[in-house]
Image (cartoon, rainbow, N blue to C red; front, side, top):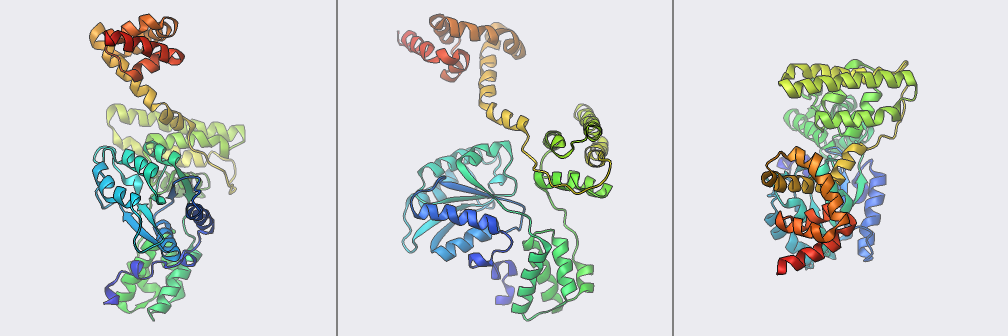
Length: 424
């Protein structure tokens, strides 16, 4: 029966010491968990992020086992709607554990929540964090989606790195010994290299070969183990791009990034001056990136997706080989400020659109005209004459949020008049 158990389950870390190559992440997570035990957590939730198979979920399970916590887990295969989260996890967050010292609420792969199919799920998670009497742990491969910004703000972020080949090899070697399986070192190193830091896929490959042939040799794994198309986080994609030795490496870094093309160009645009300091290299890199953006614009207008190869060529090798000579350089890349500002102003832009929609039908003009020619004057009126502004708001049925947007510092005065007129 034990042979039928997937090895990724059978050899899942039972204690914190079994989680390999994540010392910094372990220290940060345990410190946060102990702050919960002492009753003084700086953040009620934590968000563990990093590539697939690096040990995020395993660390949480090992910590729960070692510290005697009951683990309540909800993953991407479960329903992610608001009512499901409130029903399954909400109750667990408020009730005490009968048989353990406490609970850990684990929400796995929160970046898999859909904005449409799982409507209301993010708001439900934020409310859960507010009311929970137990630590909330979330995991994500890519936490940088603008939709997840409220979760990032509400949680302590802990980064996990892609595992090195050496640690993947060590785990595979240990499993071979436990299974009493004949394994060539070269074969294990080959599997570790092909896994690209994904320990889960490496163990699956080992089990497939080992159980099928009762031994693991280099010839077998070369014939049976194939490369997988990895998705890279933006930080990994940039690191691979700027330090690429060959054209194919730069193109792979671009084509396998787990963000959309527009967002990827923003990441590259923001970080070119962080990596290149020579004016000529900067000029070459921005020239290539601008041409990539031109092609992407043509694709949007015409739908000619055959032009996408030019985008990859220019944004990948074009930017990577803007340098004069190759020299590996470590650069601290940053999140694009434009995306951050758009995320921060999203609510304001939504209210602005609401004002334009409310006025356009009444004034028989377009929303763009309202935004460019009418709203600037409304700002002046709402700030300089709150009483008259309240009459306008009442006449055009504007909401409180719209009034606050238009009135700014005079919002309280306008709302006072507005409520007074409305009660008559």
